[in-house]
Image (cartoon, rainbow, N blue to C red; front, side, top):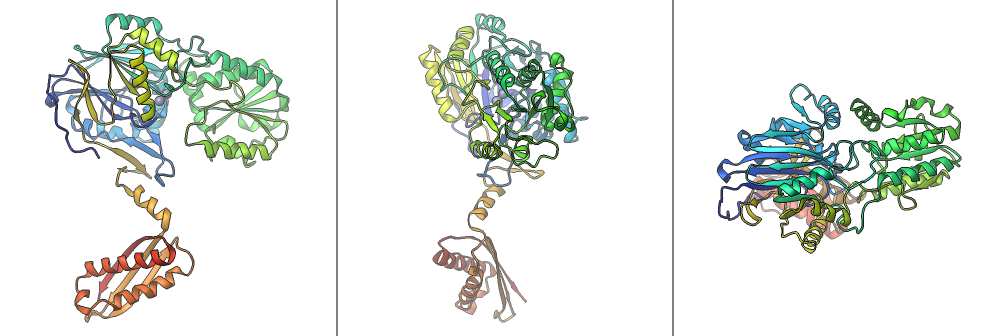
Length: 557
Ligand SMILES: [Zn+2]
Ligand SMILES: [Zn+2]
């Protein structure tokens, strides 16, 4: 927790401040707050409220979220949440944390469709007010004049957010790339970005995901052409797996299928949901009808294309089950082809590798982005970043959406490309963007939250930490019963996760440790419990070389 307040720098009645609650330390969990006014009466706006997915570091935790308690506490001067686009790392925490914030949620029609489904699942659809704005819309929240500027990215209706506090301006880039030939939805809002640059942008708070990559991202048009070519030449069935939310890619794969005279079958609830949301927003109009999953088996091999989820190796997703030959409706065989039309997100390599190995065992061909241009990232490489700097001419660059190495590289890249000022921020640091030069002026309390089952618990020092210990060396329980004279009546030791036979040995040692305690030292039950706990752990370390978690309960009759 970063609870301790730092030495506060001079309060200049700040014209514009930035407070990241999540998103500066890793890719995911984006949540950035903009503020205006002196610290005691600062007015706030929140942009995005995403999650990060847990890994084996935090056993049993699927979802990690930013702590928004600081904003919740200042709710009277908090004017709402604006969503830049509907990726989980930007909207995933809304249903979990909205009860604390109780704010209006501003988003585009497509994001609203996906959010509605989530709100219904959480029983919040009646409570949360979604205010829908088309990309390009201008609106005002409290002291903030806002504008959603269309950008190209890997989900429909992605926008950057232009923020004008009346005294200072920022362009919050959201996630973006420059695609001159998008295959679905709006074009990059280049003209508007240039206009805003002319008008004056104090700070560009900018996507850093691909700052380490030179050049520019390939266009979706080239990905579409590659997919079409591969599908055309495939002799058997073709399955394309991609991110469930990547409607543009889905549409490219469908076009490839149609060009090759193939019917399209969709597998995976998340993908069906996004397709339905897209259709409600007028997208995928010329994609034609998709067939039900039951029809897959009845179609000739060269007349079908399957679109499915699981590009990250998720064990319950369609492609993983197909690869294990355990999908109830779909089977692939020798001569069929699976296209991984996605990047493997760092951390998922093992899972994706396992799915590809299973497909190999079934003698099924696989094409990934390593072999052909079947995927292009939705984030800007160096060439695109430079272009954005030229359009906006910001005075300050604040890197966001990246791991520390990306943020640092982005600062250096911006300096090398003539941006006058840069500032590297960590979560919960408050930076003044205007007036004066950009600097960290304060710190807000906060940390991370874990969604643990149905409960929201602290991420640091929460139950996941203890579970990590348990997974490493198991647990020992010792229960001791003494009579009134403080003699031992019974001692029982049970263990979980320890090698066979060790528990019996430890029970004897625990009994010996009890007997070794003089009667006078048995009066303080708490101290006695601690003595036995230490003795058991030490004995275990001697025998096994590991110290399990140990719980001792002493009862007196
Ligand atoms: Zn993102
Ligand atoms: Zn995104």
